[in-house]
Length: 254
Length: 199
Image 1 (cartoon, rainbow over the protein chains, first blue to last red):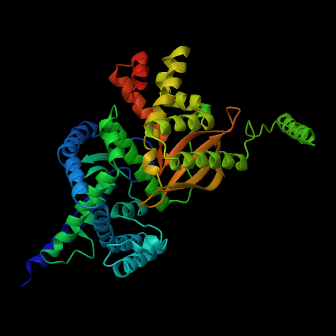
Image 2 (tube, rainbow over the protein chains, first blue to last red; image 1 turned 135 degrees about the horizontal axis):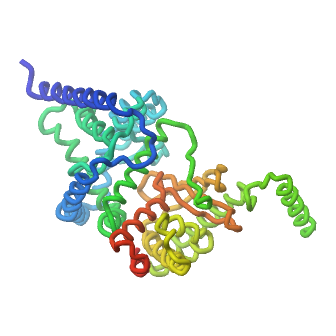
Image 3 (tube, one colour; image 1 turned 45 degrees about the horizontal axis):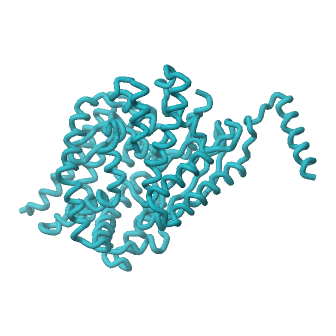
């Protein structure tokens, strides 16, 4: 008889593939690769409501909790928890890099994982950065982009925040396909989500003045969030998909 | 010797212009663009390391900003289409308010850079002048890319935009100023007055 967790992992895989199929089905129906410029926000009204919800969530829960976490837990411990969480995500970076045919990134991520899991004591210390190993990151949204899937519309998702449609699907797939944590039993299965939640709290605190100014000091925090997400996401994707140098608007010619 | 060089340069420039080649207006060279950003970065690094108070840092940042950036063209871009209906006096007012706003908004963030460094990596020619790529090294963070765009089109070599990990600072501010105007039902005077307090 299959154990419950095995069923779970099968289910997760199934959900992942279902999301992927749904996405591919959707994207064949519409323009697949829209130009990576301009604004595509047909759900703006709904997105703005979600943005207000997320903002309230930040005001009432995320910001105060991150402050409490920072006040109670000393910085080195918080850093170690974040390092640990990030190290757990490395196998996934390896998988996504391989899916993208990016052997260099895959190699760096593998090296990081091995080094930090051993010398870095199970990932508590970022030894790789001390040895100047480049910082690598990747996700399934990027993989989809490399495969030619267009970014789709802009969405603001409850709790998770801004994402292009493509990257929202990527997030769902990533949630269920970490090779390191996909087949864990109870209580271990909670390690990764818990530490990534703590990492999120730590980051909320580390970047608090940036986030506060974005959410609470802007005349239109939704428009700012959307623009900044768009620009930085596209920057990341472009660095993985093309070698063409950027072109810039020339304000002297306007 | 010096005046000889100058004459030669003038002569070359004149003949180029004459030949209709009209080389990039002020003939900003890659090296000059690089030197400009090197200077900016050195000054910024000095302010970061100086241990000044927040108010002093904002002042220092404003000085650097005015000296090395093309504030009027930045303000004009940020005002965008809304700027077309503005009077000349409003445009001047806005440029002035914008300068203070940017200095406060970014100057008060300098504390986060304490212990950090910015290094110039490379230069590349673009339509308006040069793109200078730098890397920012902040304590406890992965290094990230900051790009400065430099042009000689104002008659002096000045930077006119920055991209922090792909985020276009001018475009961000254009969005913000547009939102401020919308909130005030397009009242330019009111927006400018409020901008003097913002940041």
